[in-house]
Amino acid sequence: MTVHFIGAGPGAADLITVRGQQLLGRCGLCLYPGSLTPTDLLAHCRPGARLVDTANLTLDEIVAELVAAHEQGHDIARLCSGDPAVYSAVAEQMRRLDVAGVPYDVTPGVPAFAAAAAVLGRELTVPTVGQSLIITRAQARSTSMPDGEDLATLGASGATLALHLAVNRIEQVVEELLPNYGEDCPAAVVAQASQDGERVLRGTLGDIAQQVRDAGITRAAMIFVGKVLAAESFPDSFLYSAGRPRG
Image (cartoon, rainbow, N blue to C red; front, top):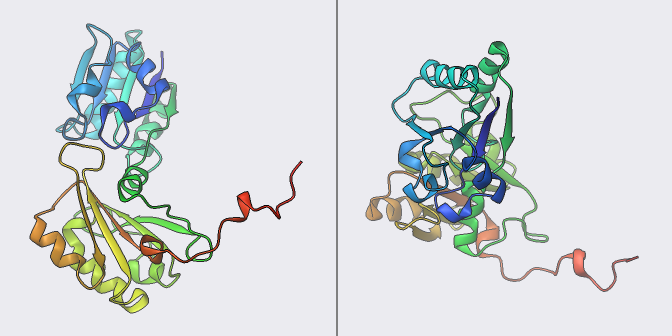
């Protein structure tokens, strides 16, 4: 039997992939992050499937559930918010399943930054304005950042930034980015993208922190910083240019 790590998407139940939905309908056990999983999404689970909220479970307890279900002959759906490739904590679960000899696979999902960019109505890679995107976070009560991945160092590139898990430290984010981006650099915050409580703030590095505090946003938010957020005068992409060789 197999553990299926499934990207649940950014929140809206209809943003799960077709493959993810089909797997939910087949598995006898579904482990899901309670505070991040909409009830409508769990409706895709097989009738009679056992549902386990992992919000208050330790890693050992989660892996024990996965191993026990495998030994009992069940396929398992392990829902992850967004996409399993980014800030999902699946790496340590996979490592332990490898030791236990439990097979697994991964079904990607819509990542939070992509859903937030869609809400903003912005492409994050704009010709001649910004062609690189750095996905990162701010240091808080969590695993320390590796050397060289602090915001001051990453910001030296001038690339577009998409920050997860950082809205509670918005002042620190702004302080570290101002030297490289300047107060006038466009910035945006999208909270609960694709969900009922979705909120959008647009501004600059000079005012975005105050906007966040005034709005009372404290969780489930993406921060974007970069010129692409306000780009208007830029050349058309070569992709569809009449001068591009075809055939």
